[in-house]
Amino acid sequence: MKKAIIIGASSGIGKGISLELLKKNYKIGISARREERLDEIKKISPENVLVKVFDSSTEKNDVLLDYFINKLDGVDLIIYCSGIGIINKELDYNKEKKVNNLNVSGFTQVITHAYNYFVKKGSGHIVNISSIASEIGNGIAPSYNASKAFQANYLQGLRFKSSKIKLPIFLTDVRPGFVDTDILMGNKDKLLWVAPLDKACKQIADGIDRKSKVLYITRRWKIISLLIKILPEKVLRLFF
Ligand SMILES: NC(=O)c1ccc[n+]([C@@H]2O[C@H](COP(=O)([O-])OP(=O)(O)OC[C@H]3O[C@@H](n4cnc5c(N)ncnc54)[C@H](OP(=O)(O)O)[C@@H]3O)[C@@H](O)[C@H]2O)c1
Image (cartoon, rainbow, N blue to C red; front, side, top):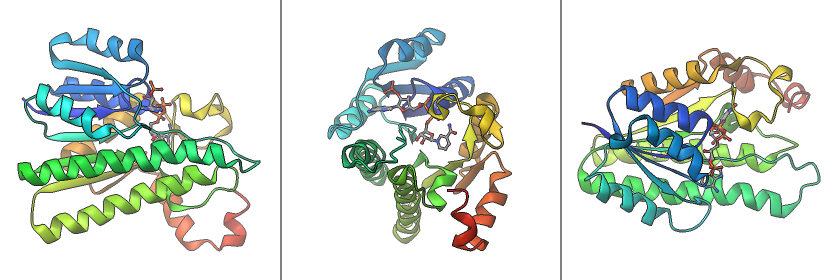
């Protein structure tokens, strides 16, 4: 039986991936801050779901990972889905810091601990949900896009590292466009190509099986990625 840890599993993409992995007969350890939401997932398959309530913006993510690794007697896959974005037109440092604490510091602690664990184990797979936002700046939520750029770049660095140390440690960077979750804050109808959550999570789960390096969700967001690369900044600034 394959085993996975999903951090940020209480709603949205993390919950959707957790349900997909249960369908694929994984045993999973799930965490986030909202206990009742995590317990709803446990109820679906009590013997295959371990729950730990945890705030990943703190400095103890290594303890969280070790808890699941020990309880599950080793894991094959670690997925970081926790993430926040804050509209910050007034450029308040405290709001930027809150985003960075989870999307940069929490992320880095999870990924370094996961990677070092897989080096010791000799193999493994790390998945992070970054965003198409990783590819461009954003005037009203600067730290969100910048933190996603950090994540995407970090995973690429670790892919280079894996190939140098010649170990089968895979790193999948998932870059969604818009997916219908709470993070859209009710703006679904104003946004482009919003993917239904179940469709997005099925595509992510299939990409995890294929051990994809970079995964656009849905696939058409690759077109936007290409436009971001070729359009001049004076055009791009009209949209971001
Ligand atoms: N939906 C989209 O359009 C979209 C597009 C691109 C990228 N993404 C990325 O996808 C990831 C998942 O977001 P989502 O769309 O599924 O939104 P969501 O439903 O709001 O999920 C966010 C998850 O992060 C967890 N989280 C938030 N603060 C946390 C903290 N301090 N400690 C631990 N967990 C925390 C939440 O759990 P608790 O609140 O229970 O702690 C929740 O499980 C995020 O990284 C987001 O940036 C989403």
